[in-house]
Length: 105
Image 1 (cartoon, helix red, strand yellow):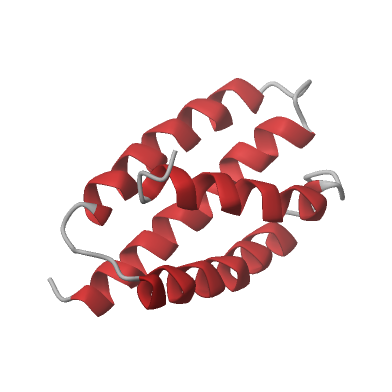
Image 2 (tube, rainbow, N blue to C red):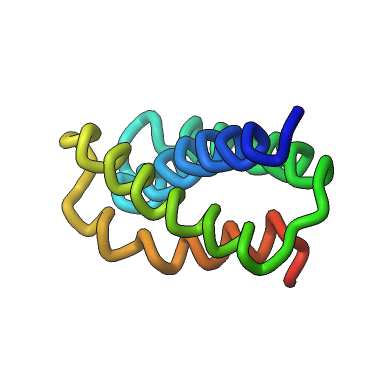
């Protein structure tokens, strides 16, 4: 796969993972919250595997982050059953995901 397609795949997987993680945080008393949290963990591991295929420079990471911000916002807007505080968690969760994926922890 090319680096461009790996970037697209990482953004796709991360947006779903973070949507699930944020959903499990903001609606923690719902029945699906624990399933969402587990799904988020599985998706994060999948994104980590994809990230190991390439050597990432700072430009790539910035590009991934920008695309992820856009994609996650779209994902969260679609999920109107999630509490509105979902948008306030976006930045923190994106920062965490970027550190995990690119082993900066």
